Length: 353
Image (cartoon, rainbow, N blue to C red; front, side, top):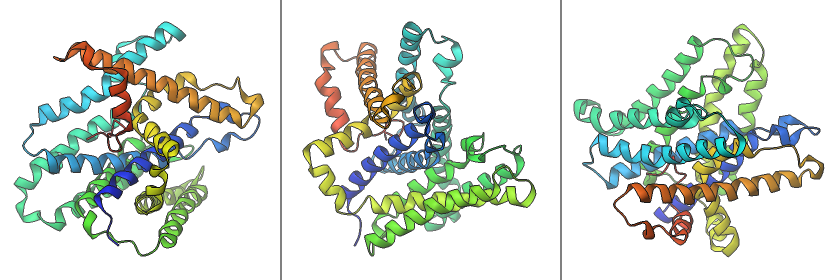
């Protein structure tokens, strides 16, 4: 069974939804105090899902908007990311007296993900738009596979060149490098989407779960070790990539039709998927252990508060952008913001095409 276009959009939205949950949970250490802070995990898998969707949507955008200059294309990407950061840094300063610095306002120094994806955007455009014209002999199927392979080689090379990590290498500067191959995999999946077939959902679920478990087993072997045992951790790149690929396939089965067909469930998933950028930005100021007495309800309550504040930030960002644009201020009603959030392929929004 070949994955259809409609299911592509459902699968991407569900992947963004899961990524938002995983990344937010990985920052919930204060909420698990007194229970087990090790439960605050899955951030690496969540980031991988994000970068995969980013590559997929970027390639989709290239396919639909050919001929757009790099400056216009890149400006559109930055315009989507940085106004929300700019506004939130000011809000955090006014409410929590958080530092208001040039690094935070302009460089987004508190958000490694945003800094990384902006660099990835530029590199992605160079590799997909410029190089193919220079390397025609390297075209066809070989080009995308070669880019993916080279990006994996770069990750492996950086692993052996960087300082030894005390904990997981994926929580060090390694995360600035290792996700580019996952973005390229997302682009490659889009290119070959019509050739991706599904045999049975059980097999794909097993592949996803096995990859998920294998990633942690490999890290457990090398964590806090030296020599060859430490180096084994680089092999975790394999199950990390396969987890994302199988997650995409699993999310492409008919059960996502059922989820999005349910009024409240579908809208809830779409809401979170459409607020992923804002959820990532606001959560660090809102995570608290003051509700730990009602565990595990504190997790649901705090996440709901994060989503609410993220929505408010999205509204404020829309208003700010309207003031700077040629559109009239009255053209940005809250209803239009809600409509964009509900649109099932409008994007996480660093991942928006």
